View (tube, rainbow, N blue to C red):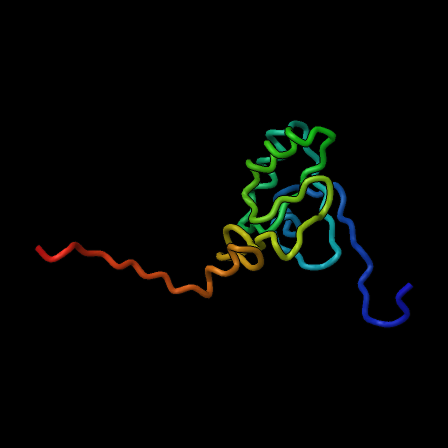
Length: 123
């Protein structure tokens, strides 16, 4: 194990309603908020009903279906069946979670100055 350092134990909030502060804020840390739902449509509505959109998560035994659900979640990163990623994958949020991307080819755009040069041959 790890012998030294500062670690925070994971915290799980269960039976949360979507109007609670813990469901509406972007919490950084080992925190899991569990909100019950009855239908897939309701789950997607809950996921999108926040001013933030950094990341979302979809669990499914059907990868194609999970991808279809992931396209409907308004978040910059949606992980299917667990966290993934790498430095070649763009990272960034939607809504109040920020604009722009870090990492991957999309991360370079913040460092580019794009120029359009237009004109015609002199006649």
